[in-house]
Length: 481
Image 1: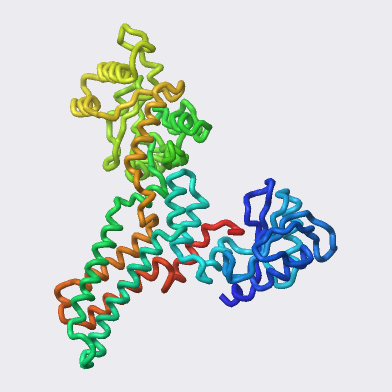
Image 2: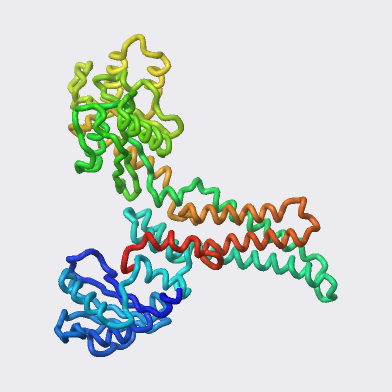
């Protein structure tokens, strides 16, 4: 903390070069001196000025840029901040950073250090910091809207209101304990304190009863592509991703580890998992791949159980238990149709129905009748050819609809991270202990539980005891942010 207080930091705060513009940011007590050393003088506060950037050591011109000066505390970090908006070539950036590194009292910033200083100087609280991190990482419109709400204080405002009311309730109980013999202190202070605690418990429980939609929107709908070997799972992943994300070969057991692909389906985030083919094997590497495949499929929101339509019996064995499962009959281009009409004359639903009927007719008569009836009753059965793309659009449309159904309204969720949920659960647990009948008449224990609730809630925004979570939060930031 002492080093942070006295050092001035600098870093590239824009994207990877080359780019049209590069932003180099400086923050700390020597930011003004550093800017003057490079451009000759300080521009007017919060006004861009065209300046020639020179190396102070050699006086060689590096670039012509815009210089900006933000004296603290009216700056992003709360300290003196300077910015240079340079041409975004690698050589220009390297020369500027090298020149800054030669100035006494300056050092290169660590990951997330600008934002950490903003937190430490009261410019952002922890939930707003997390919102900023999520905004930087947002890949879809839904994620962007949710992150922006957090950055603008949606959760922190509610948490501060809860905390203020908790302190009010605690003050009532403390007054009852410490000043019960004073004439001007009302006798019944516990009833309003308990009323506040009960109201807070109901509100926090309501915020938690959101089916984890906020976390789901951050992470995206997780869809595992699973099934027996050689069913075309990797081909389907590549078709949806529109790139060669997974190795495809005719040899069983090619996919050993889980491959992830992140998609934006009509504004909804979806993470596809290509898993190893499910089969018995004595190869220890493949066995580990199958174990991971089963584990990831069991934890997914949705499983696409892919089966080779030419070998339909291969997909009627064990399927993952727990998540929603859709059956996908792949390689339909290799199955001879049993309808006299041409494929192009059939509607999508007719084609699917005929294909499934044909497949079921091909299943060995000795197969378990329950499995066959399950397929006939399944409302989510898709017939596709991952190789040619036929039927994949319908599958993608259904995935988009499923993502909307699961994630719709999540932008308004207050809880968007597991950390938020754990803190609020701790707060709620303390409030419920405070409201327990066995604490009736025990003002000292009631006060202790209310203090525990306030203490837990303070961890949400960083008001108390946050050192143990700071490093985890800030390490996810890039250098210069």
